Length: 318
Image 1 (cartoon, rainbow, N blue to C red):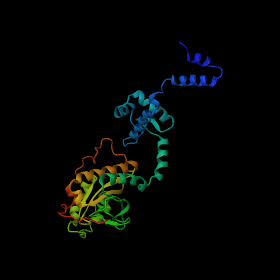
Image 2 (cartoon, helix red, strand yellow):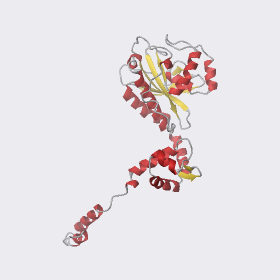
Image 3 (cartoon, rainbow, N blue to C red):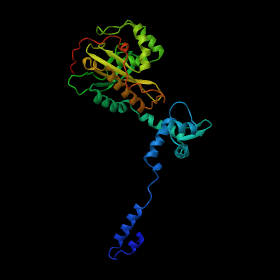
Image 4 (cartoon, rainbow, N blue to C red):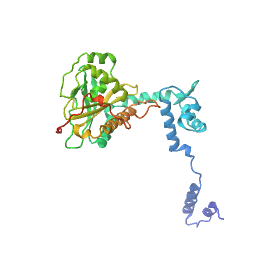
């Protein structure tokens, strides 16, 4: 059998470069494939490892990491060695944990994070999935109100529409209740002392005692639902947005004509919770590893709305 080198050597003199190129191509094709561990699979495993070490709980020994990540110890060591060499992971008495290079990277990234820049893509996805308007609200402590700072409106001709900068009461809007529920105790107590609150519609919750009982459920479910309390024809769903310090910095809300949400409120609640979780994750919030997906299949507690849904609803003009 003729070797590749033999074919290249026996090429006609008038085509020496063509013969060499042919030999080179065959030589390249004969090279063994790259180690799969050095490709995208290894990158995926490395990212999983770093995210796992970033969760609360401190360092972990190799055996625990192997069990949690379902990876052989030998594969894990192959990932850990370069990370340790470059300071992204360090080995301590308790095991492996994030190192100074990881913290420097986090400090460099944090100032570039903008709530609007991160939230708007998720809000657009929420609008695509729900067909309804998505809003971001923040707490204005001075006026004790929820203020809308970002929005993506529904494409439907009949939709909920509100100007940016509009303030909504904390006691009867979905976003307001979320922001109130996750505020500090001193602020909550001072606010509840203002009760009874003004009624904006016949459905508005005005009693401070009812609102007080509602707040723990909102914190537990990470969801607030209102129907007809600010405007008689509008339903609202809201979930908290957490930052990398586990603080609630805003509420993601979805507002729609009440008659469109009445058929399947659980689906709207699930969409809002999932979108808020995605924004929080992008901001660096890592929920506990064992926490269930609260947004999936979430059934909104009817008591969160404070009132029964309105019997009839006039559609809101854009």
